Length: 308
Ligand code: CP
Ligand code: NVA
Image 1: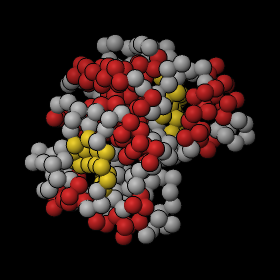
Image 2: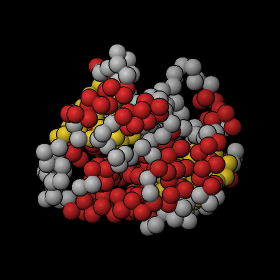
Image 3: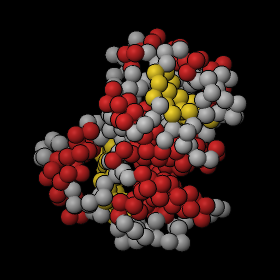
């Protein structure tokens, strides 16, 4: 069974093929209405279940649109309305769903729920974000970087802020695509050591730099994300805002990066916290391209999973 669970679990050649196919499909749609089907409809007659235990705008809409463009159908399911880990085991849910649908995308809390679902599923399972990783997002981000600046291999990527789930998938991608990675943020919010060690084991130059201005020097890409993720309690994390203030991506910080550096944010953003509107809407920013590329790259991920 070909699941898309994390970037470091997917062979390097396959990741590259997914990106190539995503770009080809994107180019083939130039000038078409967004609701129009692709010429090629490999998902015809297939159903994909999209399960959300957390809110989503981009993941929900881009998967749904992508499936329609590929000629398939989707059903969007809310975790709270299902017996997902409550009322029955995740294993039973996985076995039952495998009798109905051709693939499952799930956004969930604990990584173990994703892994258990995949382990017991007879159809491909795609990770649409857990508390620990967000691989579809970073595939879109690598695609976006390469569209603007060419191969990401050997480039310098700086993550500013909370060393969270999106940061973890960037570390996975650094190992697979071969770029340098600098984390800048307070020690309390460092990425998990296992993600850093994993990237280093792949030969990645991973650096931790507590001074944001020093970290971004020579950066090809600066990335920010929300300071408090969906699985965390905003009130309980209030103190984080003081810790993270020095790591806000603003125009002054961006001016220390390389001249043509890009700025990314997976969205949703708290403008004025992790990044200013001046940066988010400024010349370095490619945030809307990232969001668009979710659509194209996830279509390629679905095709890879289903072998179509
Ligand atoms: N970036 C991202 O995954 O956005 P959503 O939470 O809106 O899906
Ligand atoms: N780190 C964020 C990403 C949202 C797409 C979260 O988990 O809420």
